[in-house]
Length: 580
Image (cartoon, rainbow, N blue to C red):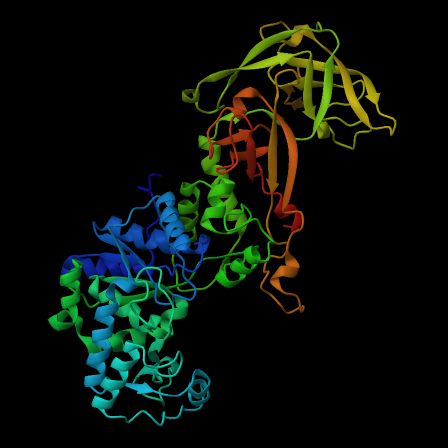
């Protein structure tokens, strides 16, 4: 597993200051217990990584614990595939949970809590449809109207709620609602639903239940019964915090052993806490969409090659593309944790990726758009090996022997018959240095019937080879190469940003996010690699010299059939496109 010892915490953010003050004051007994509570209705994306780093990082910093809890209260959208993917993503990012839980583990506690609220006169069974409830909820400037069922008696409500659980009523026929205040300025407090009837098989509990709790109810109760001390949420839940606290006030879980008895029986016991919810701004990146609904649409409509398509902003996609987890952690560390919504440039993340890969990726040579170069003053059967450092800045990476022969592949863009101004690579009659070999001069060209150059003929100046008197002779250009006789064929997938617009969600021009898809975001080419570039494991990261950072595809790559994904270019090419 990736080491996350340097994973972000909250730096010197307001959240960390709160936790520091709480620990110093002995609040929660000085303990820090956090949780990461994803809903298993899709794959995690880069924005989730910010929450993961915060939840796990802060708990680790203060010697606390973190629970991975699946918020599985909506079986219509949840799937075991997503559960397993989320666990894999958290571990890949460099973290390990202390406990693995599901909101469904607490269904019995949640049910008993709902009955307690009915007995307290704080909840009632309502027969209004979802549309009728919405119509009576009111607006930000107008109070809502009480349900005609709001004053049902306690015994009638208990009876109806138990019959809901027993499956006597149709889906949507009744709900259990909190009895708070239909005139509250915060619409979330206008008698929100606590339970609804849904006859759906659940990925964790099967068909044991036909009523399911709402997230706003399950969330605080799950936090409390797990002993969570600090419940970090994104800003859209700030208006939900009064409801979070209201449920905790009614149930008083730390002091009501009757509610938590099911936990003892199930072996899930933890002394309940009174958690506090703290909100922070979510992580937003330009040139991406982070809505699970939109990401799911991209997958369903086959606009991408699945959830782990390397163009997707999912953690599975980032992993397959070759983004190191350390780079993602460093990115969110730099972005910080605030209460101010903002959009961070994707190039900042790419620069973090470059920094990590520059230090850790061995160097290899590859040619993506091959042009044959023939060295006429070498014998037809000439073969030798040349030693190269695996990393120019770190001798601990060692060296390798690269085969060299009379015929080579070079990048087509490294030759120009009619060079543009400032071109310092190979031209007719011109010289260029072959990396690690010496200086060659272009003496002739071979063209096809259409006039396209198919071969470049050169002579090698033997005095410029390593150890010879002219080895230090200067020429302006140096190009890389691979031996045509020894090169291995590979598939290379050149990935770019999935969207052409910095804000794909901006529909002010009448376009949807799908209208901004970058049709050139994936290009597949046949490439030639030096042998040592192919003989690596899946997910190995390399720098193809002068071309960028590439990662062996975790699904398709084998040394016998190499497949590489371009992780990131050597420099930011989008700044020029955007006119920056």
